[in-house]
Length: 252
Image (cartoon, rainbow, N blue to C red; front, side, top):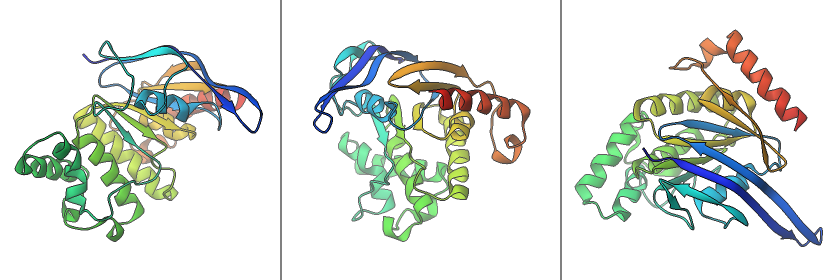
């Protein structure tokens, strides 16, 4: 059971505009179990993306430690996949080749890379788009490719930084439903960064509310799965959980 552990994690940097050191993340301790879906939500500037970038290994921590399966995280690695706000696809590669890129880098055979890529494209309902190029796809389809490209590399933890922020509201709801379906089928470990309270509750097993670089509260989300917006929009439990999280975020 591969577990992600954050212990007393902090990040301080020098802000040249303020002429002073700024603490973006302070004393964050969190455990994420294998196969868990955790949303991290909070107001702008609360340290969400900084926290994710430290877990990804893109920036070093100023204090504390990050452990994955007992091993210290000290830089980027294939065991931690990242899906960014931008689609970040290779425009010169087909959809199939984009999704096969991770397995190819891992040294798998061409046939195995293609098999894995087609499997994940089918999982996301994109089998028909395998031979297209990113510029031939809608924004929502491009982001779905970005998600399954990260999953196809079989990471221990998938880190998602507001991946649906750039699409329209209807497409965003569809992508949220598809992500929960894929999670339920494959059970990857996901840490999902968002400022959208409804999205955080809809997706996760647990919502972590961040405030001024600290964890304000963790809230379990026992809503049944599969989840669909048509069923949850007027659901009393969903409304109550969303209201609780919203109140915490607004007070942060």
